[in-house]
Length: 382
Image: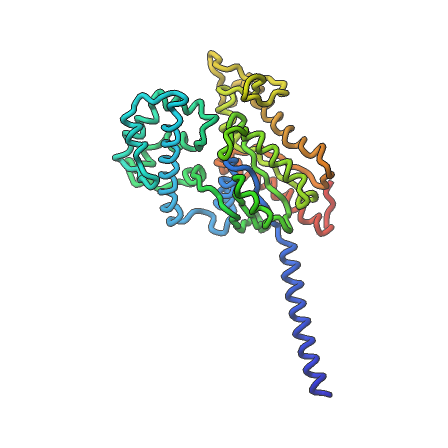
């Protein structure tokens, strides 16, 4: 009996130890601050994810190997976008420098950009047809970052010295997210687990696997895309799609009690575009923002608006349009079939501006920590 009792005690102790470890693992998982980063394709959310890596990951920067790898990514982005523009010009404003267009159009997707390629790509970018088509690119699936790279294309081509991508170069680069990418970040004393998922329509079905035990959802929408159409469907406006996607997430059974932090992104591009492309269109096939009450920017104004913050006429138009967009998104929770039990916190961002992102994330950190504490009943959200 003593032997049996000893064996039973040993098994009981082992069982209790296993239960203790399982409970510890469960508590650790529940205690994690888990952030889900969502948004439509081309919203800039993966750029924000890279910003978080620079600012808050254990690595705190990109390694030499990372930077070397991004050289080919950046070159491929430029070549791909230039070829997209070449293909689009005949239906917009034809290119005059056909020789340059033929050279660049013949490059493969792995074309390296060096001193030998610099002259022809500069000539093509400065072609009058290319310039005008770039201004009218609302229906062209091309990255806005092309203008950033072309503004310093000599450096990108290794003139006068070998091209080593800066953090800003990397932030402007595009590698389409497929599936789910996870990274651990630390902001002050708080550790976060963040998940970036593909935003293209065919990627969204994969989001479901990342929905459990989420502390908060960060949703990214580009305010600059009011006149652009989807990569997957040229008949759908990007702003309309982003608003609808945001609404779908708000009413998702997974998120009814989960707070949202809404990043209205690309405010820098929005500032550039607003004096050139009408925000409100009430007639024709491209109607948008028809209930916007203004004030509106005057197109082709002479002299042109100063968009550096010094022109009160422009700033009034800019602020009114941003507030209108903010109201569109936030109001999506007003008539949902099921009432939400969590708030929406909104920020205007420029995902390529590290100082802007760091300032906003420090503010968001306090919100997130308060949310996490309230989960365990330690504080009450007001």
